[in-house]
Image (cartoon, rainbow, N blue to C red):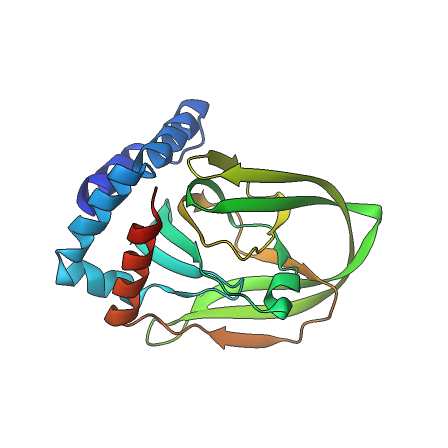
Length: 238
């Protein structure tokens, strides 16, 4: 499987709003996340210096403490994005304790490549715990560098509703409005994630401490850093 072939398959999904398209997206990400398929994809990418350069330029270390490697991005129509997410320990105690509770701008499908993922879910409730809510909106600089913009919104109250745990080989779907956080562990974990079309322009972050208004420019990976991450993922696949 190559990125070009995957792009054709993703285009065929349309807006992934009908149930049949959502099921097709689930089946596709589950298939692409199989170890043999993922190894083949990484080999294909690493045989193309042009693909490596494009992927490095749009990939970065996320503020939620994982590496975000964007393999495909429909930047014009914003219908899909295919990315690898990599949590690579060790993590500090501050990183483990960082709540980073949030929702998303897109529905998404994710396959656990190795490690495990634990997601805590919440709902807004007047009987919940108090948090500071911050509006998060992504943007770009004049040179197309990715920027995260944060604006405080005030107080919010959240009540936990459950914890979901997924092991390697599992695939799951998350609706964009669900408020959740990923509980960071000291176990190396990677996922292959497919985002659908934008449903919202911005999302909310919730934390115990207030955030100030700020803009954070994210630094893209260089080729050496990207290849190192690909090699790490390849070594840890079952």
